[in-house]
Image (tube, rainbow, N blue to C red; front, side):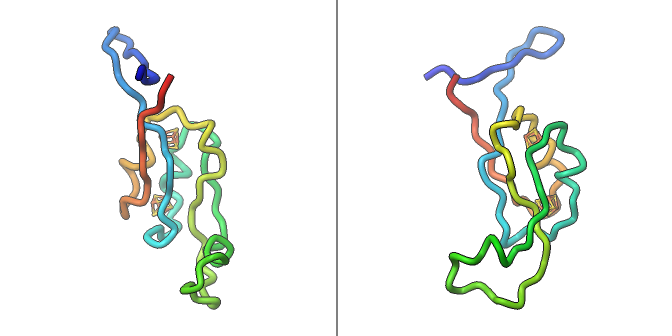
Length: 96
Ligand code: SF4
Ligand code: SF4
């Protein structure tokens, strides 16, 4: 299956790795990924809202964490993963 590929200025091929998930359990809400992302992919949310469907979640958890708002806007640069101190992001190449 052909993957979405890009080219460097020098003509070398590279395969973008698009963000597919962000782990709200490990995120500390530092905002580094939000700041570095060149697109409109992330938003800060209340972790309790993300965990509503999870029976084990703590109702008193009022921490703000990052979430993927629009994964379709990702260009697959992986800058978010490079700056994240908690390795929260998951990335995958995508079919063209
Ligand atoms: S891979 Fe790049 S464009 Fe995609 S979410 Fe991360 S920083 Fe943003
Ligand atoms: S850089 Fe990592 S820890 Fe910081 S807000 Fe983003 S996902 Fe959360």
